[in-house]
Length: 239
Image 1: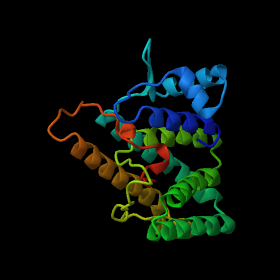
Image 2 (image 1 turned 90 degrees about the vertical axis):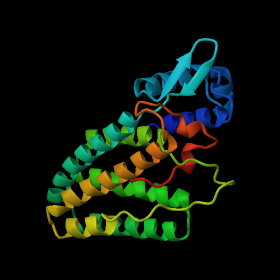
Image 3 (image 1 turned 180 degrees about the horizontal axis):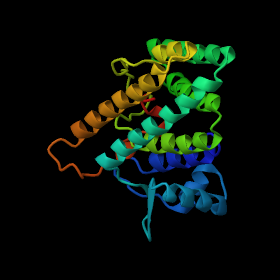
Image 4 (image 1 turned 135 degrees about the vertical axis):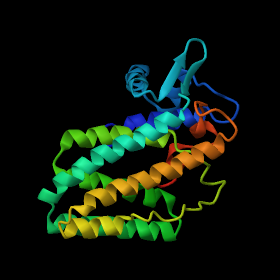
């Protein structure tokens, strides 16, 4: 998260410390792992608990909260609604400089995808979406969406140690970044619908992954995808 990177740091640390058969980590071990005070850690854990990302159990410790199919669906639907509204505002405020920045982000994402540089692709993909919010001038919306991105990362279904597994990108989104920027540059209102379809397509892919992982189980089944040997830093590009 942009405004509080400690949230993601703590989520990563919890995921790393609860991989394999170890489901919980103590506050003491977590504080030592990321070298922060217990007081600051508790404040961060309280925020993560409000977001519904973690759970704490007496005598056991802290764990990533199980994910439901509905939470995956709801998160992307919120992104679609909020980012669509931001794009409507961006249409009225976008400048030539903004368009150049978006094209640069798009080109970097494409290069990173071709070279299988997951970290770079993820970062610039996120920056692309953040830039649209910046252009809109809706600063409160930026904070809300940063929170949604943090939640989204917590339930990514394809997670693996970067050192242990090669990255195989998903098929390209048919409603890609380039088409979105072209429409925005032309002040074409269809850029709003393109962005929404971009997010809808991602939602479908993530739900397919969730269903495949939980095949044969009830829709309400919960899972701990991020604790299955992976970290937040190795989440596939979703934006």
